[in-house]
Every structure is written in C-alpha cells, then in structure tokens.
Length: 305
Image 1: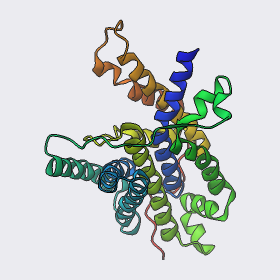
Image 2: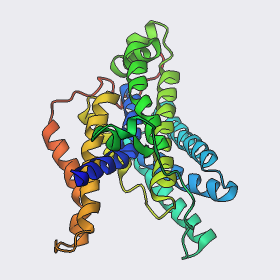
Image 3: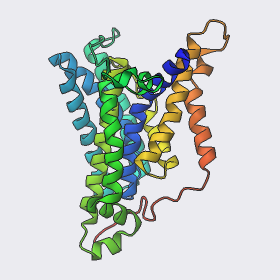
Image 4: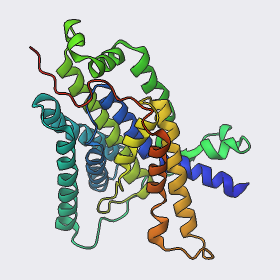
C-alpha cells in the first residue's frame, strides 16, 4: 500500500507541468488559435526561472519571471498567428525550434559544458491535519506548494471559461468570429489575450518543472510536455477539468517510467522505458479518435471588414 501511495503521489506531482500547459491550451484553442507555442513558452520559462533564481536566490521571483516570459513568448506568437494571419502551425514550430536553439546556446555561452548548478527549489509541504488522512492525505496533501496552487487553478479556470462573460467571448470568437464581431466583441483582441493567457499558464508549467521538480536546467528539458498539454486539452474537450484527468494519465506514465528505472530486476533498455509517457500520449489519442470537435473557427484568420 505504501508503494501505491508513493506512486500516485509522484504521478500527481509529475502531472502538474503538463496540466498547466493543458489549461493554457484550453484558453488559446477555445478562442480558435492552435496553441503550437506551448512547448516554446514552457521551455523559455524553464530557462529564465532557473537563471533568475540563481541570480537572486529567490525561487518565487524566478517563478514569477518565468510565467511572464511564457506570456511574452505567446504575445510574440500571437502577432504572427492572430494579427498577421500567418500559418499557426508553422509559426508555432518555428518558435519551438528557435527557443530550443536559443536556450541551448545561452546555456553553453554562460556555463560551457558544466551545466547550470542545482538550486534550492520548492520542496514538499505537508498540510497539517489533511496530510494525516489515511491514503488520501499522503497522496494529495504532502506535495510541493505550487501543486496546491494548481488544485485551485483548475476549478477557477473552468469557472472563468464556462461561467463568465469573458469565457463566453472566448468561446464565441472560437466558434463564429464574424457573429461575435457583430455583437461588439473585439475578435482580434480577445484572441490575442487568450493566447497570452495560454502562454502564462505554459510559463507557469515551465517554472514548476524547473524550480519545483528538476531544480536545474538542461537542454530541451520540457521533454515535449507542451505537446502533451495539447493532447491533454484535446482529450479533455478543452475543459480544464477534463484536461486534468488526461494530464494525470501522463503523470502515471512518467511516474511508472521513473520507478521502473530504479528496479534492478527489470532488464529493459532505458530508452524503451523513457518511451512510456509518449506511448501513453498515443493511447490517449487513439482512445479519443475523432470524437472531439475543434472550435469551428480554429486556425481561421479573421480580419474585420
């Protein structure tokens, strides 16, 4: 039982960066903009979060700056994808490759081959009373502090998207931007803001990954978690709550990968073991099939007449 509790607790912790990226994808794609910049926003945040934390000794400041940098990357992406009408997939891929090259170059420029030193990140914090509840307590309430923040972000994001006027505007411009325009909704502004909000969430996911989990930066350390966030959002029907369930599946796969690597009696190549999260992603895609309908105006450039 203890092993199962540790496994599920680890799965929740590992799923958080993917979940934050998935929430960001929900906001962006509900507005009709493919969130192809998810991984670039996350990776840039990973790098900046660690650099700021090393420079200031303050992981909270590193987290905040990382979130803002994720939003900045998304803002640049939105200029090309929303304002100028460039192909969203191609622009997103270009940003991803650009950030991979930029972060890898800066890593070598400032730290050579030594790599960035580890930081004192954010460790587990047991919530008094709740953490002592049998089984549930150690799983949910003995987590790093940013994980607790995400517990609140998921329902709040769902409420904003489906129960507020702004959420209605987002969904409107994603389904029928021309109709939304006739009702007085600024389509371009709404889409740009949605993309930036998505980038902020992806940046938050990158900050959690670097400061709370890995506590350093390595090349391409996002490990395609931004792409997994896109799949999780799709599987969850672009609902933050649905995306949370899909993200947990990826967390289970990643936790299984790490635990198997520690078992000496399993003679399996580490390269095969590292495929587990991506195999889980493929299974999620197969299970979803064509049952999900994208917003009707997805990736369609809109220009006010």
